[in-house]
Image (cartoon, rainbow, N blue to C red; front, side, top):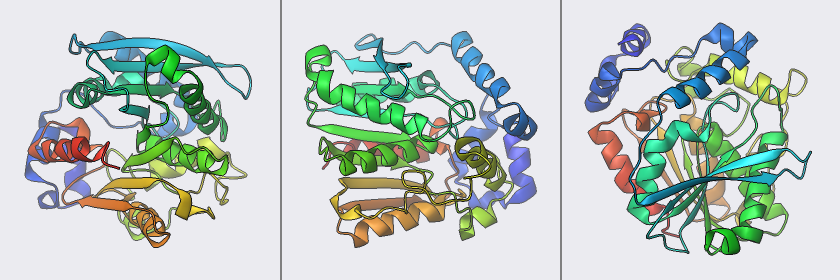
Length: 325
């Protein structure tokens, strides 16, 4: 109800898909971000997310095996946790490297347990979800390096330890996790790694310019807005670099789009990230990359966390596209 009340203050409710609006109104937990804590004490939000996951564990289907593997960072020997979901009927050619959202500042793999269990079950897949390090404690490029190290581990060890084909990897990420997935894909391309066959980017962060029409339209929107984006980039890049175009931070600041793998981008009509999603899809398409863009009418950022007919349509799209490369 709190989210709906805030939406009423800033936009016409009729713009939001009716089923999604009703689901948000029924949602039992608040998804609002305390702006003061986000800016000055992000560690409080980080601890709250971890505590919530511990207190509300998700019981998934019995035919999905879940385990953690720890791998060593090439940056500083930190132990990166890989949270792995594997269908007991897994197809060795169906491997997903996943990155959760949270503005690079908060979040953990378990926050999307329901979605990952369902995805692994529906597609008979193995999902490796990376518990990458968070900002501001660990600024760029450490989270991206954690992601790239995870990709390299899968390539070197996936066949032996998970019985998968490491030559058939799909990267998947949402919001900041979509940015991380795309950054890792660019980094892999720069290092001659061709194991990524498809990238599926769900309302991804693309760049730190914060100047698109949609970013300027949704300055105070709930769930994600321009103010939150400004804080996230400050934490991720630091005050000196938050406005700079840096390779792997600004995904448009790249010179080899044509050699990136096929890409699917899902954007939301009522999301400040909408126009940068369209911009990135255009850059890929113009470079000759097989690119599909779906801008979902009436959708808000993180719409997929709410049960609705709209989300059901998205999931059908997700299942049909994930390994369609």
